[in-house]
Length: 226
Image (cartoon, rainbow, N blue to C red; front, side):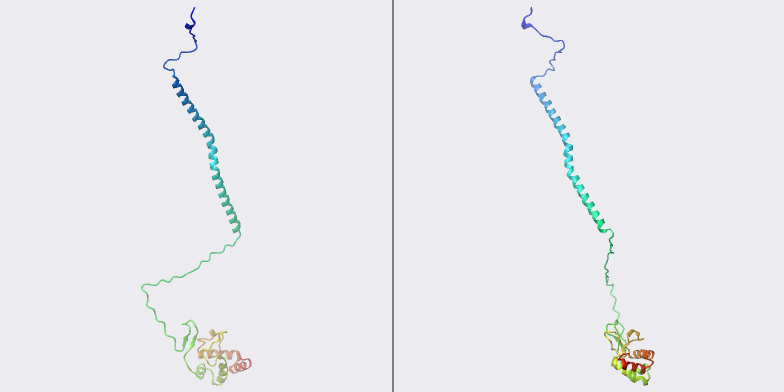
């Protein structure tokens, strides 16, 4: 009979643990701590993997909304521009012109202007009428114009009332000029202010319209113009 203290239990299915692999209590505690830390990291990583797409989507949502808003505003502006300009007449751009004077080098010597004729002069530097300055008397002008002496009395009557025998007389309202107030002044061949040219034209006018200087005189005395 075996004593109770000598009794040893044996199990055939349990292999004995080698002494080299047996863990001390301190080592077992450290190992459990490492396993717990790794497990915690795994949980955190898994949670981050689940939350990250949602966070990215939330972060990107305002940018997408802003882009859509800018595009919609630009689209509305384009539509408004199209509606506003459709069918409108676009006037061409009016561009002004300008001239630039470049002083030549070397500067040329000014050329003197030719002297005015002794029988005429310009009152505006050559651009205005050529007034008569040749002198003379009514009889001389009528004789030079080829008017017969028998008509001088008719001519004197008309010219005295039209211009007072002033070769440079000018009607400011109508522009009639010269001794007989030719209208327009440009009708007179030569210079309308030259008394001889003026009287030659007047002879053709009197005979062409009234038949003679006598006929012109009769019309003038009745109507006070001719």
